[in-house]
Image (cartoon, rainbow, N blue to C red; front, side):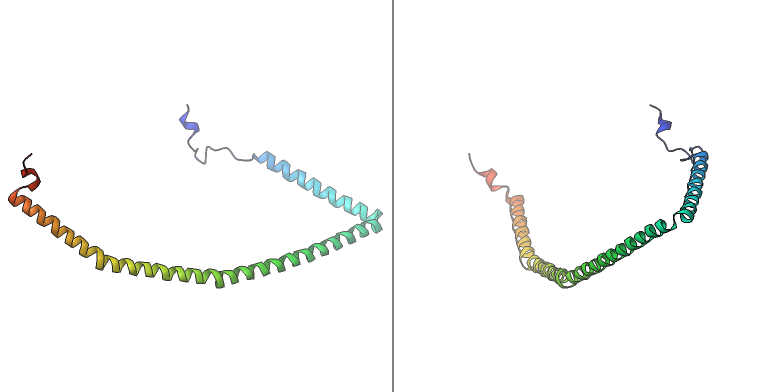
Length: 148
C-alpha cells in the first residue's frame, strides 16, 4: 500500500482541477454561440419582424404572470412569518417562562431537602457508625465473641 497516495499533496505538486486548454476551448465555444445567437436574432428581426414581436409579447405576458405569482407567494410567506413570530411570542415564550419557574422551584426544593433532611440523616448515621466502630475498637466485635 502506497502511503504517499493517501497524504495530501503540496499545492505546487497538485494538478490543476481543469486544464487551461479546456477553459480556453469553453470560452471560445461560448463566444461562438453568443455571436451566432446575435446573428440569428438580427436575421429574424429583419425578415420576420411581426412574428418576432408576437413571440416577444407572449414572453412579456408570461413574465408579468410570473411576477404576479411571485408577489402572491411573497405575501403568503410574509403571513407565515408573522404567524411564526406570534407563535414564538405568545405560545413558546410563556412555556419557557413556566419551565424556568419550575426549574427554580425544583432547585429550591432540592436545597431545602438537602439542608433539612439529608444532612441530619447523614450526620446521625455517621455518628452511629462512628460509635459502633469505637465500641468495636474498645471491646472487640460482639458478633465475633459469641460462642458457636
